[in-house]
Image (cartoon, rainbow, N blue to C red; front, side, top):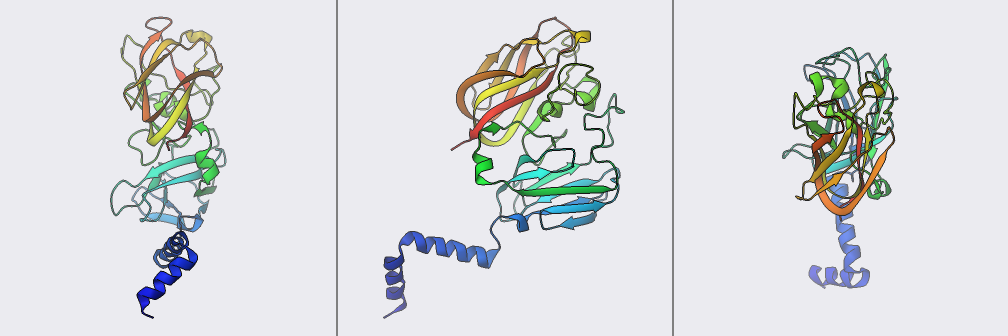
Length: 313
């Protein structure tokens, strides 16, 4: 019996699906491990791009105070096109699902997070981060692949406490054409950081917000949220800043989606989460624009925006 006859007999006896599964399994054994904890590298890189310490086990423990320019880099193997990780960057943050696509070939998908202890812009002495975050000499950073259940769960695809200004290597990501005084306390990333306390003094954590300039100074403020890949959304949630010293809010807001569709929402002056069910649509991002304030010309702000749904099928 020749080799071809032998292969055909094996296929008939075990089934083509089992053969394919076996081939794939062998390819993983020969070419590298399947995507898991051992394929995740976490490194602390300094301002000169030198690696201070790294781990390939999905957990990095540091015995060192952070210094200006330090960056946490979490990466996967270069054969991955993207990765969806559950990351905990500091003990004062909950685990968060982040999506990182491969940017270039042969690059690898990665998350690059610069330690945000050194702020720029106005009010650079007031941080939008928890007061004790990133402080001290003991730090533990963890990252693991999100489970199938976590990935497919109905969830807020706009949530990212680790978001930052500028170009991002991971998602979700918030940007704006208007951030008052370029202050971190009013940056776009605050609107997706998961802290939703809206009532009280908005100059301190945890009441940071996306706070644009007044319409008189910047007449068309916009807030853009990118998801990084297609997701199916069917509900929006907003929390408006509720501050009696600056009694104002956006009463009419247009939300434009990446598929060209749009909806109008009409928030009320309230410090509570306000839900707006919408028709299901598959999109990669959304933009809040054409905002009309209750008090024309006054300050208004979003403490949080959310987009609920599931991964696109």
